[in-house]
Length: 402
View (tube, rainbow, N blue to C red):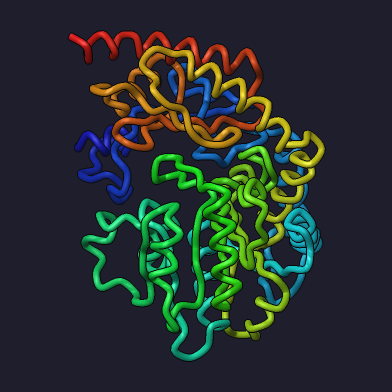
């Protein structure tokens, strides 16, 4: 039996792992969660400062969401999108309100599917011969073929060529480069407010303002990928709000269901109007069970004023990280932060040591750690995480300097 098979606890005698090797062998298997904490099958407790990669915004096993899912499971799970549902309608109305109104929603099962919807919408809106999408190097938009080519990380394209045509990439936060890439075949610009998987690099207000102006001047759609940043995590309901712009299309997922698979693509009504029945679809997207989780999640996020929580807790976390020896820079917004480590310190090794001591973060790059805890994280939990990081970094800093 392989190490991967053993790590995934394949039955004894099975000569292969039951899972495709798209992820490395896990070092632990989690069996329970509560709030900002997780427990593995051996009873070890962990403080979760990754939240399923910015997913579990209102905490693991949130009882209000669990009750909503259980009640919906006893009532109606699925009918297909040939028919409407009460929770789906309510979630769509709430999201449109949070985005300023005047738009329409297409529900998906994931962020990548939301991006695919946005790409198809841009192509339909652009019309014949106008299909191009410009995105930024360092971006991440998903792993389906279209979303993969929109992702500005060429190393991830290898092995999957030829990818769908119509995508071009420019330097991040460089308005001149973006303008130079626009020609009559371009229909849309696709950007993240913060490049999350790219290392947690925020856009500047000047950049987003300039992109909005260029899109208006050239008649392009401005698509903002809020899959990792949306729904309060950055200190605003959506990351683009930090920059004072209004996009034409917004994609979201992750935090929307607090772990229940659901995503969405929102577009201004006049943009969404180019879709006609049969142009796009989904079997499961927005089905009542997933939408009931999203409805409960949104109700909690609004009740606790999630953006304010993220802003306050993020300020405490940022200040505390900046005080640690071995951290040379902290970047990001709200509770989506990265700590850049001192030269010679391996972020992946640090993350591994932190896991063994009960703190979950991830190496978002070889030299930086990402922090995206649940938005309900307490001051004492932040202090505990910082103390663990400080202790582990002290050891690594000594090794790096020797």
